[in-house]
Length: 304
Image 1 (cartoon, helix red, strand yellow):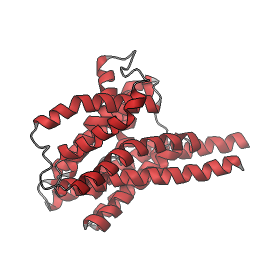
Image 2 (tube, one colour; image 1 turned 90 degrees about the vertical axis):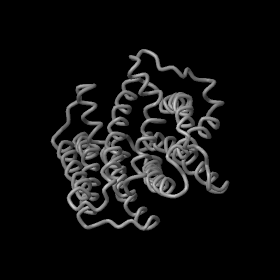
Image 3 (cartoon, rainbow, N blue to C red; image 1 turned 30 degrees about the horizontal axis):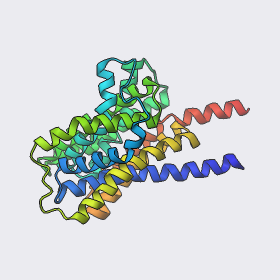
């Protein structure tokens, strides 16, 4: 009975987590399409999160040990500063539906490549099939803009989504190799990401908050900093404990679909049939690439 309750709770946590991931795409697209600059959104994401988590930072060593400077640097600024900056910049060019596919949707593909080259990991046939389906779906979404030339600037957003997703995949593999706890990794990223990128953002001259109300700033801090920056990370780690990493990865298949729905409902984005088909293909591919089917088969064999 207790195990069943944990499963139901894990499913609820997973659904909330992937919904927050979709909110990141939709909310950031809305912000950078209205009064906020990308630099302002990132400031409001990092600085409040760091101040909130500062009491915990005192208790931890904030310098990754036993790693090369390159790997340590990725842990320090990769997920907290570089990834959101690049993806948020992409959302200033391309719609949320595209961002949901080419940023979180492509993560399993890039992560598999990174794990192969960094850790020497190999994939079974089902997961390879999933990655191929992700690639096909992503191409359907990306090539739509090129073939029909509907918006000249969208391709820039697509490139930024792919770069950001690839860098985050490298980060995730290095993090797995580091032996850090999720909370420790979050604190390291927030501290160094804020320390590194805040002066750069301020020097761009784009952090002015002109024509932005205090209410809009407060809402953005709540969504970007508290909900996306802190809560989503805590919920994801909690979900992994309850139902496992593969299952959480499988629920990630919903992110491209939810981002598409959010873009349609809240941003009045139009999604042509070929792009919609590509989004659903990516979702199917993410589910297969998560490895959940292999895990279930192994569990069934053990029970026989």
